[in-house]
Image 1 (tube, one colour):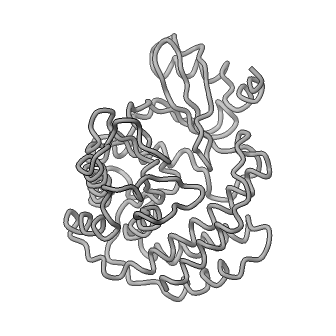
Image 2: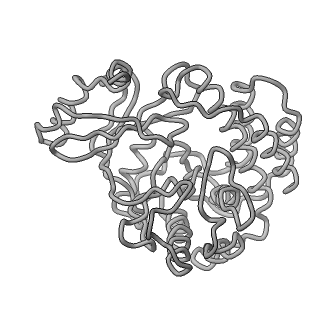
Image 3: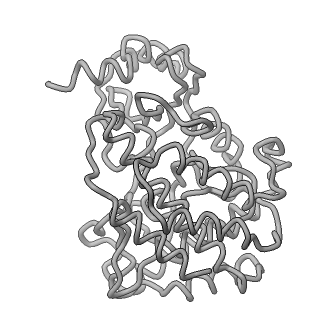
Length: 342
């Protein structure tokens, strides 16, 4: 197996295996097989198998890490906090600050079901009713997340919600400066205009930061149920409308294309429109969504910066051998579209 030395270096099975056995009380985890799960473009995600079953390991990419990025401890903390809430999450088996792999990591249960990327599984949600059920579940879980009393679940120190979007614009502008390889005028202009277009914040909540179809697990037999929300790397306390802005970016309608890094299915017949998704969320949450354009513009800016970060990490060989190609046009298009929303 040609990648075995690399895998051994990334996940240190002789160290991780005994730790898993201790955490689970099951010695069958001392020895396991592991494989890199494709699709992760930031942190590295591995499927771990043994006679005891299947688990999922999350760890940062290799190489130099940007400040505040790839915080595994925060991912584990928010999922533990939400374990008894209305928001479905995977159970955390263990988390570690760096003793096991040399970098922070965590292991969670593998939740059975479908992670939807560029196509629907054969026979799954193959009619309008099934596709609407998927979509309503997706909108409802986001509204439920935003309704969680974060103080009550122990996340009062998970972020500083006041002034959220202003800080986010500043932070992602800094990430852009740290990872860009050349000048892109529209990205710079979008950053400048966003900094002067911050709307008043209506409310504070847990914000996921990357809520899209391929970051949830749809139940195997029921498109209308989500088994777990995944990928909490960008979560914090803040303005929930930022999640709605991202949902609008990631929700393509018939005839539209998806961002190159995020294949999707919502442009197929039978899925609700963006307006219908907003209406569903607004009905469940009771929130006014009339001033959403700055949040949609910010979503385009943030994703342009994320795309640039993927390019930089891939070029540096820090993505476990994954190559995402040239994304220059994608980054320019995201920024140009973001500007239209302002």
